[in-house]
Image (cartoon, rainbow, N blue to C red; front, side, top):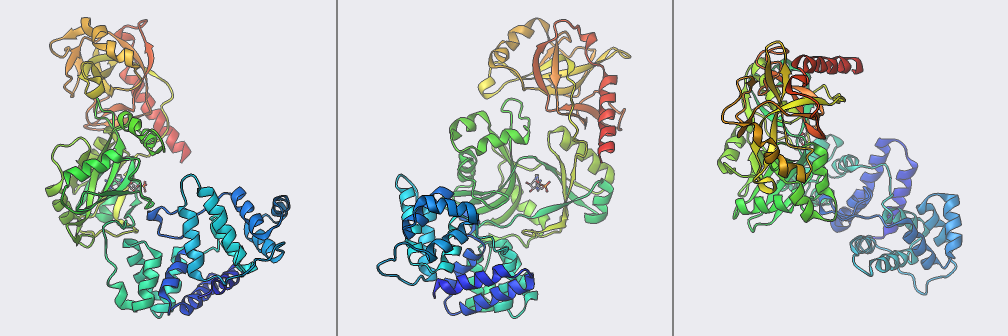
Length: 590
Ligand code: AMP
């Protein structure tokens, strides 16, 4: 079919502001294409400004300069004129339309543009790469314009630049498809469900046009096609959560990293998709390799969260650290500097079988059977099944102490609702996000052996505050960040004279350090905030029963407070008031 027809519909759609009217126009366009499903498939992509589903990563959008050059080349209008006209018109579509209407050279022969030719050439433009790619892009675009009617030029130019903007998104296309091929717009939900597990608008359009309802049954979860992720609602308290998703919930740590849907093919190929369904396998070759090896010979789709970790302490690092992995170059180096752990929390497909309709509790059992017990890169999400408020709160504190954002509470009976933000998953996040601004002075009371690059030295130090009332040192964090390499290497030597066989009696600690140190050295430390903690003894039972306070994301500022003795360190009292000040601030802010 001619592309002109599509362009004319686009013009009408552009002139309409009502959504219903838009849907109705789109429906008519789709109906006209019923007998050529290949064309319909292409038009479904084009209408939302795309050429292929997002997860294939085919990006349109050539730069403005190239586009103007191509318009000049195909119409024979001087580039300077094109440029000045563009400034006046401000829209590349209108510019191309004007240029084609006012061609200075008439092509020798003009060929009518068909949908398939336009699509094929656009795909060539998008996929051109390497040395001659600019040339290919300009020539192909210019070639299309040479055969275009003015109105066709308007839309081709916009699509090429990634600026179609008809105001139509996927859901409107689904509405129109439902009206055209399933009899009514109310059937959109059905289409949407399929789209959520197979987000390829072209394929969906084609299947319903060819087979109607019967075709929908054939759309299933498939390896290599990302499922739209299930999302969570949010509540403010354990009580509300249990009322909503209880009586029993699976509470999981909520890691603050990058969502990853990991597809493992039988031949060992692994594809990783982001929350927005982009293929992000490239920046994470280590993750792909770990899954490929461990699950060799199997097929699976996992839902997971990947975080950056400190290889020495095993501590989870803030989200920004992980983002170093998203850079384009130097992946090898980034991989070494920012190792990751992937916490798997769901399995959606296993050895040929979709599991999305299986209740979470059973999916969890299957997951447990196949995940490794001990693996640096692949771990199962930490979770607990809870039935009462107190346990949920306690678990929440543990989660925060561990460096996560809070917990995800999930209804064990729920199926995996792709693309849905429902009440089967509810998040409970730390609400006090205010920053800890002042540094504190903490006493070194123990050390943990380093691993990897830090083997032979200490990976982290156990830090404490002082409580003058009881004359005790109470732990408040494990610190492994902020040291230079030399400093780190010299730590064992520097602290040697304070090494003792057993924990000093004045130190209160629930953690077992690898090396105990006499409280003597004071370091200046800055953290992100103060949180409740089930493992640190600072302020134990003061703010909450069975909880202490901890400093989250502690870093050494570089200052050895040689001017301070351990009794001059920050006190427990001070930490408590800093914690309270934080809370007041949040109340004021909210
Ligand atoms: P939010 O972005 O605040 O709406 O929280 C949802 C996100 O939390 C998900 O998209 C995941 O990336 C992330 N997440 C971390 N841990 C989990 C978990 N255990 N279960 C589900 N999502 C998790």
